[in-house]
Length: 499
Image (tube, rainbow, N blue to C red; front, side):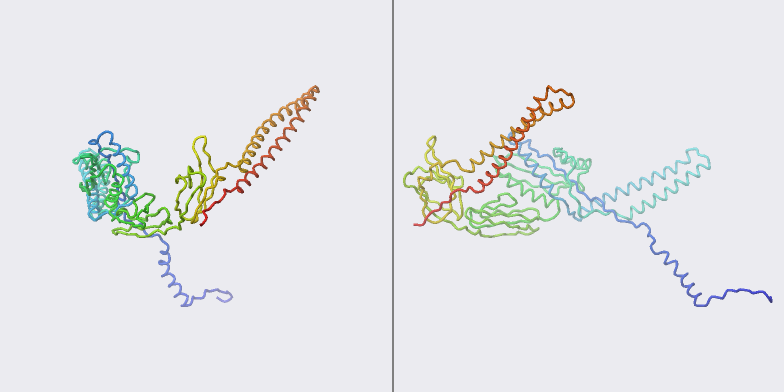
């Protein structure tokens, strides 16, 4: 109309419409980003532990005085198995566990479904009203459908059994309870009631002066013995037999192969120590056991020791051969001109009487000379012997007892000063307490008659503190002197002389 101004919106361009339409189509995928996916089904690994039980060793056929050996064997068996942390299960064992657990779950699902159906059938006989009957029937029907789905799921999904299980000792063993081995017909029930997977039983008896050790490993899942053996040995060979049994048990319980090592050393008298245990001289027997790093030390008097790490590999015999390097040695004669009943001690060990021929690796040793015996015995102070080829002549002056050593005198002076200080300190505290009592009585009681004794006790306390301070200074001084003398004092050094 004329005279009226009218505003109108401009139409959006086609490009803008196209952009809006494209953005609208892309919104659903954008909104879906970041959304958490539905719960995913995770596979549960069953039977992650293998429980081992060690029965008490049967020693009923041993004499009473020898039955303590059963405790030694049982302790060794426990220690061996406690060092095995994992068991590699065979395909047969995994199948056995899987079939048993699968069957148990199917039986449980079938029983639950049968019970639910039976409950549904019994609704007709409970006398419910039509409305309540239909309500209960609907509930039980829904429950039956869920149980049918669960039964189908259990039937179609066998459980997953751990291929590598943690090997643990039975809880009774941790509490120190060890039962005797059950009879063969009772082993399965014994293990089922205690949730035992592997059962180790053993017995020890005597036959013509030798010991017979029988032992076996029983597996409960398939009711059979995994391993059994009989070992005959002399009673004194028990310590060497036990490591061999431990090696066999490692292989049986872990499901993994063992390894072996053998060590040879020169000279033939060299001692060979493996993991802090002496295994022989010159050459060790074959040492079989679990794969591990062994610390080997080889020693022999007059030779430089050698220590190294030897790996015991599975299914492999590792051999180590080495020769020790000899130390430089000195040969010298120890003689005396004036007397022949001289006893010689080198590093505290009696080596013989003069004259004496000695061969020692090059180095420093402690030498002490003793003449006579009983009340007439005369001892020399220890000398530092530096070995050299030649002759060492024992002089009469070696046997003269010298005056008191400075270090001993300094030690006695320090102990005396320290004792005086600890006597003066409590006395000073007591006198100071008495003086404080008199002074407080004058200050608070106003008794002027106590002025003279208070003055005497006050000055006495000051004197006691001064004396205590003097003893403290003396103690510190004597301590410094003692330390200085101890570090300064050295034994005389003697050495053979070449002719």
